[in-house]
Image (cartoon, rainbow, N blue to C red; front, side, top):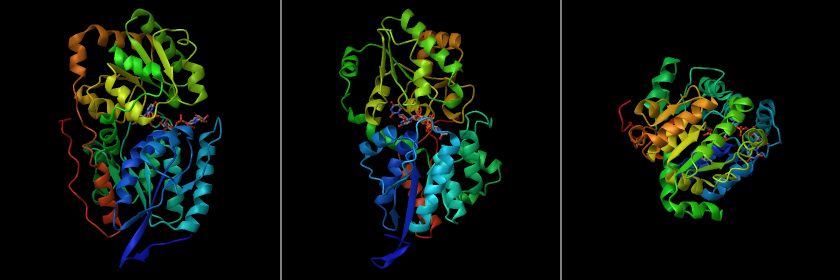
Length: 396
Ligand code: UD1
Ligand code: UDP
């Protein structure tokens, strides 16, 4: 049914449309959707693009989110242009019919930027969650650095996770009154999930959890790492597995066939490498809490692992998340095969180095980002007030 802001029970209810399409957006949007659904003055209309399919549905199922609209855009081997055009075209029709009062996009995926541009073209205010992250290199991560900068140009409300991201926005000329520091909602999601100790569906993971063996948890998917760099990651994992027979490497592998083709051949025959399908978020956070070391090129994992006191080796040359690097929990090691082997070995063999990195810090949030987000949206629409901003618990 078409709708606009409507009088409901004596006051105006504004239609807020969160739009998301990939696994990390879904995880970070889930606490915000929940908080919007509890709001008196805001009515939440969830739209997913389906840029990811299985990995998106897995998250929505866990958090009990049933999308109101699903653009179902995924095509195998989709190009960035496919994602952009299919999202914009689907939203064009949807906005004309549904007329939301504001849209909420998260982060730096192509779904997110396509959603922001489509809303802007319709004159709908854009709320940008996780605004102001910058690596300083337009080509890395690609296309995410460009995506988030484009969204910053057209957003009406910029929800910066940290004071660092706020400073980035101010430096680019975003008015201070349009920025709110909320913390990152990934910490809201993590804190409500990690302590549930959900069982692993795969019995070999449950056995591993019982065994107390040291775990190296690995994830990789970055577009700029695909190809040679990712083949090198596979070879590095094979060498680490051979020289550390007591260590178990757990690799929940991304659905992208390009990732699988690159990373799996070198490790497929290794007894102490456990390759799994993408783990549901509850299982993944449990595995994260069991891990000894985390090796990743993921953005979200860089934010979660420090909260759990896990040393994180990041297979990138730069990061838009400097806070945990400065705090000492995250180390940027790039994708060179030799360097990956050496850095993992050092953490395994040098207890002082390990302890220095295994220092729980929580620079990205305190679990209240979604409350601050909804309060800021209510203020934007004139039906509420902001609440106190997030302050980092560690000095960086
Ligand atoms: C996307 C985002 C990236 C984010 C990542 C999280 C862009 C440009 N990239 O990258 O910022 O860090 O998601 O994982 O927005 N596939 C499936 N099923 C799924 C998911 C993916 O089959 O549930 C396969 C499809 O073949 C698809 C391919 O993976 O073509 C790549 O997916 P895509 O969303 O284009 O890129 P990601 O690398 O996942
Ligand atoms: N994650 C998950 N299952 C997995 C691997 C990762 O639920 O098998 C979660 C992880 O906890 C984090 C998010 O997915 O919150 C990160 O997604 P991804 O690495 O795909 O994207 P990025 O954060 O790099 O954009």
